[in-house]
Amino acid sequence: MTIDILIAEDEPSILESLDFILRRAGWNVSSVTDGDAVLGAVQRLHPRMVVLDIMLPKRSGFDVLKQIRANADLRSMPVLILTAKGQQQDRRTAEELGADGFVTKPYANADVVGAVRQLLGENGGPA
Image (tube, rainbow, N blue to C red; front, side):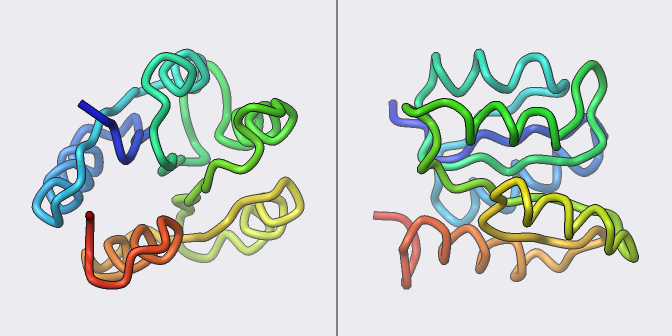
């Protein structure tokens, strides 16, 4: 099975919500709950994109994004950043590190699905 989206989120209720709405939209989803696990999961699962929370245990989303962009095999993988409302500095930092898109928490389900569709280049939904 091809994994479309890897979610990196440590808050169980947010992870459950993201998993539900992305699966309901038709994508295959996998998840990790700390920053150390992201790169291993990316290399093992080869997802089409990553939904990455900034505030993760063990390694921040910023560190993970830096590592993804520094890896020639992963550099072009779309990364959607989840950031808390009002954290403009986080957004600027993520942009500088090469994030492809942003969703602000709390988020509307349609915003997440729309951002994922855009980053995966899908207009009507999963193939």
